Length: 467
Image 1: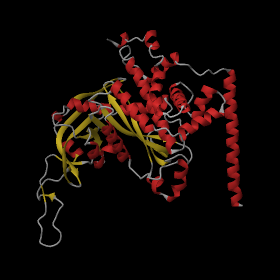
Image 2 (image 1 turned 120 degrees about the vertical axis):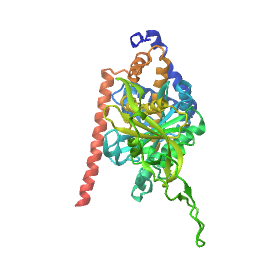
Image 3 (image 1 turned 60 degrees about the horizontal axis):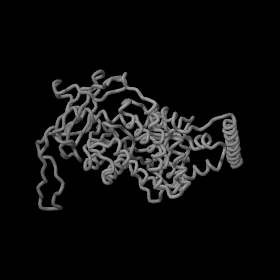
Image 4 (image 1 turned 90 degrees about the vertical axis):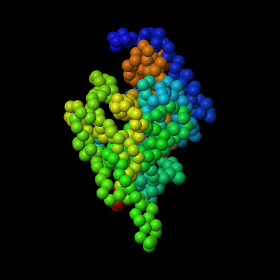
C-alpha cells in the first residue's frame, strides 16, 4: 500500500471515541478514593486536550472555570497525594507490552532538562540543560524509553538530585520543604538509569532484548557491566575509550618472600598496550566499512557506513570482557561515532545499524511530551509532585501510542499531533464562551495581584533589614 492509499475514515475515528474512558478505568484500581480517580481522569484528560499549556491552573480553569477548590484539590493530588505511582507505572508497562511489546524490543536510556525560574523546585540547580543547549537553572530527569517495530514510548523516570542537594547542609531546609525522602542518597545519572533497567528486567512486565544509550552513559564501565547482565547493549563511547584488538596475557607477580602475596594481576611483559577506539578505526582499510540503512526518517532513509569487529574492553587498565566495537561514519561529513556492544558474536552488521537507529526514539518522545503533553509545564516544586507529573505524562503518551497502534492498519504513519486532533473530534471539549473567558482572565488578574503584593512585601522586608 502506498502512502497515497492511507486514508482514515469516520468509522476509524468513531472507533476511538471511548478509548480514553476505558484507559482511565484501567488505572482506577490504583487510586483509593473516588476523588483520586476523578483527579486522575481530569489530569490525563487535560494533558491530552489542546490547551494553551498544561499547568494545573490552566487545565482546571478551562475544565471547571474559576473554582479555586478544584485547583487546590488537584494541586494536593499531584504534589502530596498518597497514590502509588510505582504501581501505576507497572500497569503502564503491561499495557505497553500488549500494544508494542516485542522479544527484540529496545530500552533507550537518556536524560532531559526542564528549565526553571527560582531556586525552590526540588533538584533545581545550574547544570547542563539539553533543551537549552547550555548550562542553566533547571531540573534534570533520567528516563528509560522503549522502542520496537510496533512503536515507541517512555517507561520510567527518576529525578536527578545534584550532590549538593543530597549532602549539602545548606540544602537541608530546601530538602525538607520539597519532601525529599530522608533516606535519599546521591546517585549519578548512569546509576539511576541502571536501577530502572534492572527493575524492568526483574518485573518482566515488558519484553526487551537490547539497550542503547549515548556517550554520557556508555563512558561509565559500571553502567555497562550492570545493564549487560540483563540486556545486549549498544552504547556510544568516547573516542579515547581504550580496548585491545587481541586479548593480552596477564599474570600474578611472583611473591618475593616478604609482604603480602600478590593478588592483583598485571599485563605480561611485552604484551601490547591498549589502544583508543579512534586509533583502531583509523588503521582499518576502507573495505571494512559497509553502507547500511540506519532508519527511515521523515525526510527519507538515513544511511551511514558501519564497521564492526571483536575486541577486548579495558577495566582498570586490564583486559575485561570480549565485546564488539561498532563504528558508524557519516557519509557526508566523515564524522565517526564509536559504540561498544556485548551482543553475541553471531550478530549481523545490519542489526547494529537498526539498533543504533532506535536511539533517536527517546528524543522523539521528549519532543512530543514537551510540545504536546505539557511535560515541562508543571508548576510543582515537591519531590512527589515531580514524579507524579512525569508518571501521568508517560501514561498520556502511552495512551496516544495505543491509539496510534489501533489505527496503524488505516494510517501507518499517524503522528501524535494528528492523534490529538482526531481525539478532539470525539472527546468532550472544554467550552470557552465569553463568560468562562472572563472568569479565567479575572482569576489570573487576582492571582497576579496577590503575587505582586507578596513579592513587594518580601522585598521591602529585605530593604528594612539593611537599614
